[in-house]
Image (cartoon, rainbow, N blue to C red; front, side, top):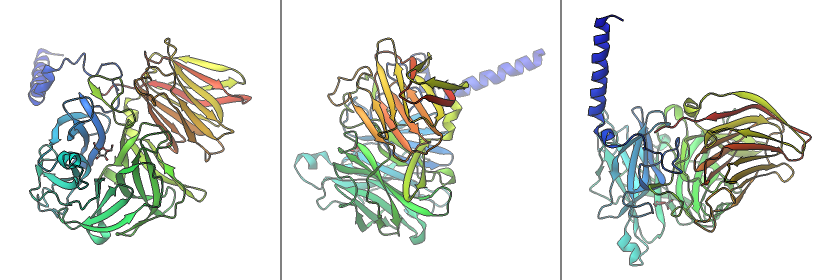
Length: 517
Ligand code: FRU
């Protein structure tokens, strides 16, 4: 390289450095070498830099940016007066932290809700050229609750004209009042083209209510659903209603997600779903069984992105459970989100199943895949030592129905995952997985019925990230998400044959996952 081009390179490099510094002055104050390295800090899942987080909120895509707002208490690592924290992403893999978007006000704390792009400027907050982002959320008035009233949850809206950077609350708030429903919250809004109206799903204790509006400001109640349907072991929360094509056909169905706490199959918080029809006014279903999106204990309050490209349905859940969310052994921050997952609907026999499976983009941080075939003969096992197991992906294809995967370390902590073919159950046992005694119900054996697994080969995929495991069986047909707090990093994976003459794991991959922070 000649002197002139060297000089040019130098100038370009300094300019890049300078402009970088200019854009992100806060980076200078953060010691990057310690950033996101605390014990149990997830490396490829979203967590706030510090303090308490629960539900994902306001998930909306606009102008190349995925927004993730979240229930946030900036003063402590336990739940407190709720704000909407904010982060953005261009790829749903790496995230940029943004200032808090919504603060409590005279109407109350800012509970969960959604956000939409008001393309037609129905609200009048922006213009057609610069459509506003509108957030629709629940106000929770503490004083009302403390006084023993029942009408302390109302619905409010706020808008942003700069793609989420700053927010203005509507002066006419609340836009929906409360005539005495104790748990009336978590509005999820969508545009319904046939009637050219906004439709809100909102829960009212033990049922869903649907409302509509021409402008996001004035709302009318349409219908109710669910008092006599589905699971009712606890309060219904965080609804989401969306349309999906049944894979491999032209059939369209509507799916309703309902989070519920307590009463999930393995205790505490969980998300059930209903597959049915929506006619613009009513949601109906002939489903008689109870369907769960995730059988693990740690996937709650999840909903989907509004306005995602290519009509994709991208789901993110809060990776915790109200049973012990406040007690988990982290110090600087508390709780993570699941990886973003694609939702898809499949018809198996006469039954519809909602699959949830990591978005494809996640592949971009999964490193050096070495593929091999593993054979485990009867009464034996295969031990694989892998230094990065604690931040990894494990994946294989098998038709075996009787095997066990054990993650362990030299402190003798174990996470045990077992496929019991005869019982048609998959079991996640974290009773001996490390720190478990911070709360009496944490050390659980979690069961998942797997009675519709395909006969032949299917995929088993694990994502392990320091304090969590996500298990995807048959590309998201059966899913378990669970938190874990091992005393030291897991480094050994044992695959055990549980009584078949021979077990074959095809295309077995164990890969380190890059950190995103
Ligand atoms: C669900 C939930 C919501 C509520 C929010 C409060 O986890 O209870 O129903 O809006 O959390 O933080």
